Image (cartoon, rainbow, N blue to C red; front, side, top):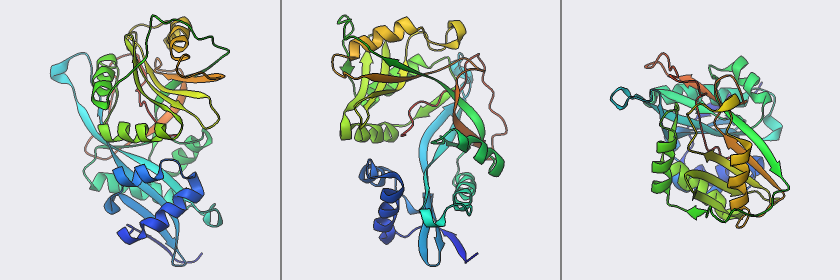
Length: 300
């Protein structure tokens, strides 16, 4: 194998990084990401044969609320997210992505983070990272597809709200759930992604949601939180009738053939959504209720 060099990029290499990003992931969100998050010291590239072959980024993400129901005992674990790990096709299958991820995990610890998270883009990647890194399954999500909905229920009027309003309402609804407290920069990035096709941060009655229209026209509810979140929900899921009521209200402003909805779940149910590694100072995080840890918005 030819020589492989892992390093931080230089600021003058941003055009090269954007070209690599565009080739691997497309152009959506690229300018917003580099405006909001790019810091050379939190980015790693792999150089092979004097060419940039792979990249990955560490994003400050807020923290993980690890204890709930007793404000005086709340603990918050400072967290970073591994994001946009990509390799050019001609350099794949030789482990460059694994090199990037493992080095980003080390970098997170050296940079003062207590934990690092990753949301794999495909289910097969969970086992891939389990076998090659210290990341382990931790966040779970309930994901359901709804179709053939009829617009109705005008008693619930969707109201677009600010980032600060959404974060405050989100924390209220997740007060009994161990979860990621995502910071305002991540929600700003999500709003910039929504500008491509439509969507935003909404309050609908006593619920809140991150809504994004996809390029094909369908709707992703990337996070739907309702008043029952964190309470005793039958089978660990929010009731379909309540979700249908919610969706019929947003169908007036977001008509679509299909709606993909993500909600929190009870422990032991749902699908794998995100992975976690603790960076040394914190040895263990234990949930103190029956709900699986909730991540929330991912930029898939």
